[in-house]
Image (cartoon, rainbow, N blue to C red; front, side, top):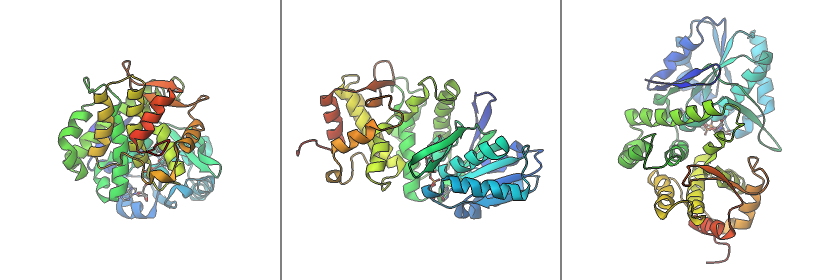
Length: 365
Ligand SMILES: NC(=O)c1ccc[n+]([C@@H]2O[C@H](COP(=O)([O-])OP(=O)(O)OC[C@H]3O[C@@H](n4cnc5c(N)ncnc54)[C@H](O)[C@@H]3O)[C@@H](O)[C@H]2O)c1
């Protein structure tokens, strides 16, 4: 088991490894009641392990599966169910599931009784390396994703890598898109995470979900996220924006393809795009441009836009300009000699080169 501290105030730990779910009980010792929020298929497999680790009375509260259930009416249902069951201010909530459960249960915990403690128990690769850490909770409105939310740091995160064995292959691969992002966030000469080396030698084992390697890779990604979150817990200094490497195009692609691309697939294409964009801006050499393509490709992720004729560069540019992280024009997180930096309105020629690198030609090729 690897234990990683997220040095926010107060600090909390992320336990990563096989069998970690049994540690949930220790995090909520002395609570009078513990509400476990999950989805049916996940609860069927893993709720009993969590329940049996907890001394206090527990109850499982189910929510629907899918992004449409990450909404205010689910939060209301959960809070009303908590109230009927008698959950009080000093009790605790456990979010057992992927990012949809984590975000919804996390937000319900943030507002119920003006805030009850939450333990994040992520069961998807994406939630383990990203969504469960950092305290961002939110639900969607018809008007847009994650528009209502709160910062609510968990009292602990338990990432049981055994649970990843039951993930659908496409969901697992989607999480690898974020893993690729962490590997590409640093200068490869330093490779402080060791991820580039691990991915180079262990791709096949990682795709086979080899348990020891998987736990190692998750822990290394968690360390990066924990470090960035601790330096910018409320997303104020711009440091946390570096976690959005590859995400400007990814968000636009998710909208343009009406979510037929998973988040991780879109991030993979977004990584290829920013690698080429940085190359086109002469911030990095061709070796970096190639690496931003090679790492997602080695993980079996798409590196070009599928059905490129169905979307235009102009449409994607307009979607990217609307990205909520943009401070006016077009903003990208790009690698460069000083590491990752926010770059606004890159030159048209560099944008054209970046679009072409993912198979989108402004004029017919
Ligand atoms: N709060 C944050 O900082 C943050 C960061 C990134 C993403 N997110 C959010 O996370 C969400 C996406 O999360 P996700 O990719 O985990 O999707 P998800 O929660 O929808 O899970 C994907 C699917 O896998 C199933 N599943 C989960 N764990 C399983 C397991 N162990 N075995 C079998 N099936 C399992 C789920 O029931 C679901 O059908 C989005 O809503 C996104 O906005 C939040």
